[in-house]
Length: 387
Image 1 (spheres, one colour):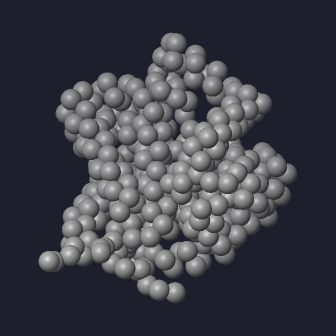
Image 2 (cartoon, helix red, strand yellow):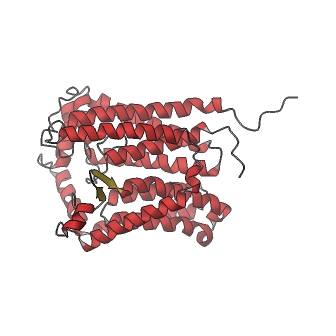
Image 3 (spheres, one colour):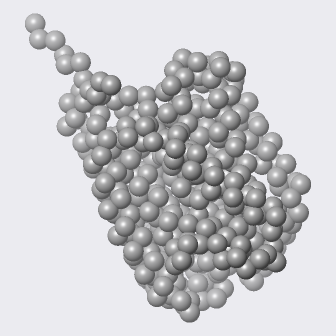
């Protein structure tokens, strides 16, 4: 009598990792092309296009390096990477609280610039780094590593659940102070997905969700600029003003129709739609590629999330499962929130479309995260190394 093997053969999973890699490549190439077309009206369009191409090239190398290395290395380095990220976020939060406006010493503004009403970036020479972009991975990896260490204690409220929630709450709070509420929500959901996947008690997870909703509501209610933005959103939703970016985004959708105006032929990006190459790039895609282009984007992100969660479900060890689920949830939520903004379902948040919107560091980090998911997928069906 022949007994079944104890593990499935890696070849049985190969199509999933390959499909996820192909979808990532398609989104990246499509994003570079559309960023180039959407930014041509800018005075510094060449710099934007060059940054995106260089981000794609660097990110491609990072993707391959992450995909072909053992993801367990991130479990070993999760703590120092997380601590370094927290230090960077603390510095940004302190500067944001001390110098919330443009009136700050030149030395401070040179390193921590005030852009679009926030201090979210470190500027080191020609390179601008948004620490919260890096936190998407370091927080997920740290919470995943801690969940493995806690094991069955995760179901205990004090002995496990709170120990996972504390670093999530710390990072979310620091990012919200910058201020960057949309990124804080993405980080909170990604961390919450890891907690849920780790087997936390459902009641505790629901409590975490309620605390998150209450926190977001409080930050909107007691923050003047956020409540003003919500009021403007309500006014715009009631009577669409073409001068507002939300309405310009909807006009772009309407102009595109079924098949679009043609690649590079959109008109809303010509001064009507601010950040049509980043915060509202899906509107630019809808105008130039039509409903077919939007459906294509939806299909790509749907496939990415489907493959990501399949990989997480069949990972060879708990750390791989937690890590892949958190990173996949992060990409899916960011794409959903971006789409919700450009269709005026929620107020503008400044959240970019993963792999597609302009932003060199953002693109590199998304490609790195996708590479780590592929690494988890490639090692399924293979026994983990004994330590």
